[in-house]
Every structure is written in C-alpha cells, then in structure tokens.
Image (cartoon, rainbow, N blue to C red; front, side, top):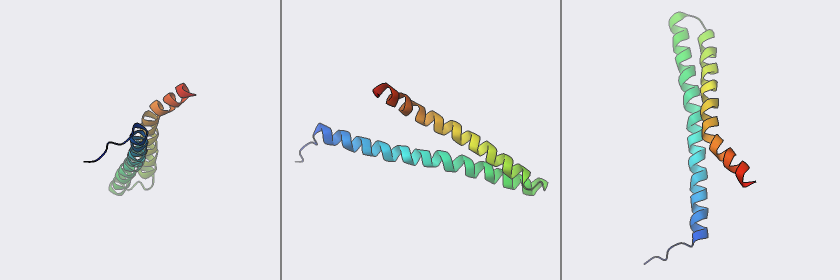
Amino acid sequence: MEKPLPESKRSKNFETFYAFSLAWQLGFLIAVPLAAFIGIGIWLDSKFNTQPLLTLLGLLVGLSVTIYEVYHVMDPLIRNDKKDA
C-alpha cells in the first residue's frame, strides 16, 4: 500500500500541474483565433480577389480576440498576486 504524499509535496504537484495547464490553455488561446481568422481572411480574399485586405483584417480581429481572451484568463492571477503582495 502506498503512503499518501505529504501536504507540501501535494501542493507542489498541484502548482506544477496548474502551470502546465495554464500554458497549454494560453497556447490554444493564442494559436486558434489567429489561425482561424487569418484562414478565413485568406479564403475570403481568394473568393473576392481583395488580397491582402481581408487577410490583414482577419489578423487584426484574431489579435483582438486573442488579447481579450488572454486578459480574461490572466486577470484573476494578476489580481491574486496583488492581494498576496
């Protein structure tokens, strides 16, 4: 029978898992909107022959969505850090 982990070890494991989880989530929050909106922009540019106008618009929309989403994921962590200081 395995001996349970001490509280400090469990806390350290949780913090490590949380950091990896947050990094994974941020990776998707950055990559997916950018790729999707740029892809839609490229597709629309080829459809309407407006290169590079809609691709650049897709880039701007993708960046806006990415910044908004990353801010909302990071905001509670930033607020929590300020309370701890």
